[in-house]
Length: 111
Length: 113
Image (tube, rainbow over all chains, first blue to last red; front, side):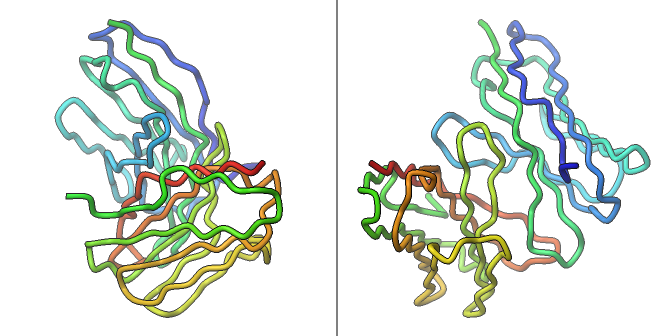
């Protein structure tokens, strides 16, 4: 079983839609959860960073962590064509250097 | 304003010909990481430096080496590239390890002919 599972998509939505991206994980020791956005042929760019369970909002983006279910989500409101990218979830344990990534979900927002 | 810089952005090499990829950072971060990302796959950590301390992942092939001559620069050396080493190589930095987020460079796409 992979440490982190993420639906690779692809996911296509019309402009203005609400997008939901999700990851599940198996290691209950993960405490730090991140979402990265990666445009084609570019490096990952940090979008959201949360610690433990709860919600965090930043503009059109909301990250949710449910540690009891080992499930994290990223919501994008009022999606824009510029949001078209691959979204990678990542997580780590306290004191550890290794980030465990999902394989990424490719999102296309259609104008 | 670039914080993590990778050169070159695209590198073509021949099977078995050594290649070096470069990463530099302006963040004065203590930790520098090298990841390998193959198409449609998650980035895979190869190794990292905490200051001058080198930490190799257990499954990183011996073909991959790294050097960090100073805080700002870190190099990835592939001694004898094989076709299976064609990938995007990502450099990342963080201030510390425990809670600190990692900031990625734009990557170097390596093609092996």
